[in-house]
Image (tube, rainbow, N blue to C red; front, side, top):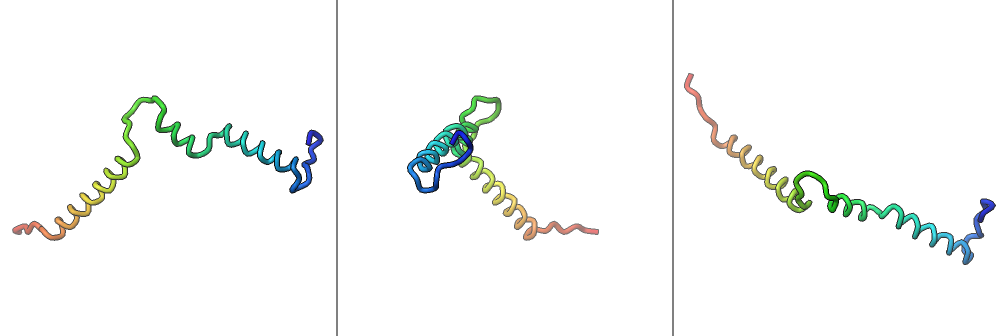
Amino acid sequence: MAGGTAPPRGSAAATASLRRRRSTSGAASGGAAGTMLQFYTDDGPGLKISPNVVLVMSIGFIAFAAVLHVMGKLYVVRREA
């Protein structure tokens, strides 16, 4: 392997090489879940709220805007000219 040639596919050496590559690359990068966990656990400035709170607040805002839209259509203010 030092000369740049890979062991034949299906051999024990190829399996060990693949296992070694996967374990080192996964541990080095941390994976997507590790990155997201690190993002939410970092000590940085700002407001810390969970993703569930963001989801509930955004759905509530959409519902509030929809209710205001319907009320605006139902209760039209008539102006005297």
